[in-house]
Length: 575
Image (tube, rainbow, N blue to C red; front, side):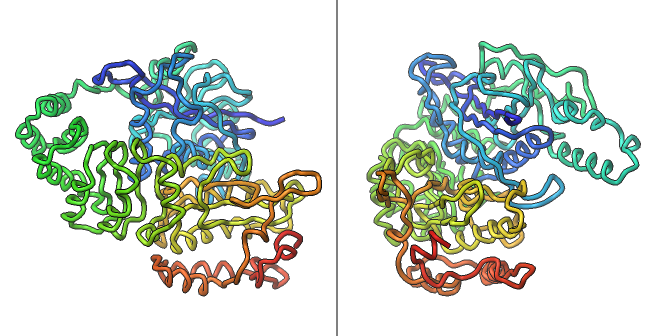
C-alpha cells in the first residue's frame, strides 16, 4: 500500500585509481525511499532541498563530503573499493529532512511531516519498490543544482512534465481554469509548486548515464510551457579553464609569484584558493598569499572562514584567525589531514564566537578522541551549535548501545498516539540556549495544529519532526526555516540515550526516569542556568516569541503546553 517514490543525489566524484587531474564522473551519493510521494509532493521536496543547499554554510558542508569521496571508491557496480551505503551522512540527512518535513507555511503548502527510509547509495535508480517515479538532483555545484523527474523508463521530465502525469490541465493557461473556486485554487497551488523550479536546469541524460551506466536514459521531449529543451545545461568546462590550469601548474612548480599574480585577476582568487590545497604541507612563505585570497573570497560572508582542503598546521590556522577582521561564527577546516583532536580547543579559543566547526574529511581527527572531548565538554565548546564530523553525523542507529555518541540535550516526545505509544528521543551532542529556543519555536506550532484529530495528514510524525527542528542553527527573528543553516544530524532513538533496562521478558525498553532526574525549569529558569554555564543566550525578542507559543490555550482554555513540575516516571511515562 502506498505511492512509492525514490529520490537520489548525484555528484561528480573522481573514481578510485583515476589520476589526480581526472575530472570525475557522476555517481549517486545519497538515496531515500518515500512511501507516499506523488503529484506536487516531489516538487515541493525538491524545492525545499535546493533552498537548503544554496545556503553558503550548508553548501560548504555538502562540498566537504563530496571532496572526501574523491579517489576513494570504485565506479558504479561491484568495483572495489565499494562506496558505503551512506557515504555523505550530513548531505543525506539534509536531503531526507527536505523530503519528510516542512515547518513553515507558504505558497507551496502547509506544515508537512511524513516518514522516509534511507536507501543504499550504490543501488540502481530503478531498483526500489516504485509506483510514482523518481527524483534525481545533481549537487556537483550546490549553488547551481540540476534536477529531473522520471516515470517508469520514460524520458527526463521537468516539473510540468511530471505534474501532467496526475493533472492533465496543469499546463493550460489561466484562461482555462474552471469556474469553481476550488478548481482555481488547486491549479494556482500547482503552479506555485512549479514556479521555484522554472529556472533550475534539467540534468542531461549523459550525466545520468555516468551515474548508472547500465540504465538507458533519454533527454526530454520538445519544449512545453517552460521551454524544457532550452533548460538543459551546457557542457561543463571543467579542468580546461585556463585559470584553473595556471593555478595548478603554479602549485606543482611551487611558483608563489605566479599565484599572487593570478589571484589579482577577475575571479582569480577563487581559482587560487581551489588549487592551493595541492601544497602538502602548506608552505609558510605562502601565508601572505592565503590571507590575501581569503579576504577576496570572503567579502560576502566575512563571518565564515573557509580553510577547507588547505593543509594548514595549527599554527598557520591560528595566524589566519588572529588576523581576521570580523567575528568568526563558522570555521571550516575540512579535508585537512594535518588537524588532530588536540588542536580543537586551541583553535576555538582563538575564535571564541565560533558556532559551527567543520571537520569533515579531517582524516587525523579520530572518532574516539573526538567523542571523548565532546563528552568532557570543555568551556571552549559551549558556544558551538555543532561539530561536523562523521562520528557526530551518523543517525542510522538500530539498537541501543551501538554508539557512544554523547547526548547533551534531548527532546523527549511522550505523547500518546493511537498508532504509536512509545516515546521518542532526539538528542544533540552540543547545543546553545539560542539553538534550543529556535528549535522549540519552530516545532511547537506544528504540535498545536489540531489535538482533536491526531490523524490529520500534517500531524508531526514522532522521530521525524523533532530532529528536523533540532538540526538548525539559531536564526534572525524574521529568517525563514526553509533557508536555515544546518549544523547537526540529531540522534533519533526510541530509548533513552545511554540508558536501558530489561523488562520481565528480557526486552529492552526505554526508562525515562533513570536518565532525567532533578529540578524542572520554566524557560527563564533554564536560560539563567545556561548563562551560569557561560553559554550564549538568545535575544530577548526570540525568548518573547517562544513564551507566547508556550502560553497558547486550546478551545477549552487549557494550556496546550502545560509545565511539568516534576520529571517522575508516572508523570512522563504513564500520563
